[in-house]
Length: 131
Image 1 (spheres, one colour):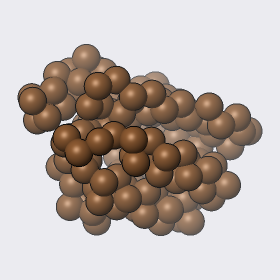
Image 2: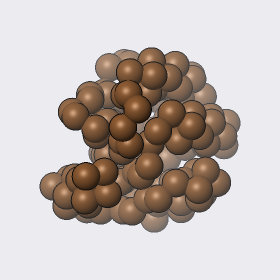
Image 3: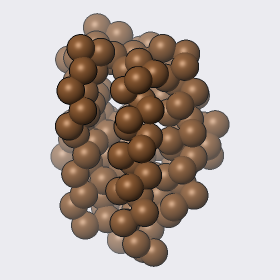
Image 4: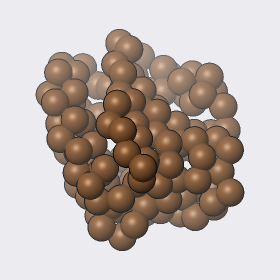
């Protein structure tokens, strides 16, 4: 986990799904470290198709520089075998804004994505895509 007063995250791999728990607003410092951490994990995912389940808790939104870095991060994952992203937005006063930002990020990279309000539903959707 990358501690920060501007946001934090945790990355965990379970089979062919990369679980990412993000909290708080992401600035360019946090997103740069996230990009470096994602590169390490993506390189270890192997040759089989894989997916990401990203849960956003709290009032997560991205500064413009952070959004641009997340576009690069998503492209890196796509280039290394990621086929889909499920995003779960929890307890956010800015859920609509965050969803619009994530749509721009994911559409920019041509990755299949969907939004959920429940982690179990998100995981079930990803399981059907990668199995």
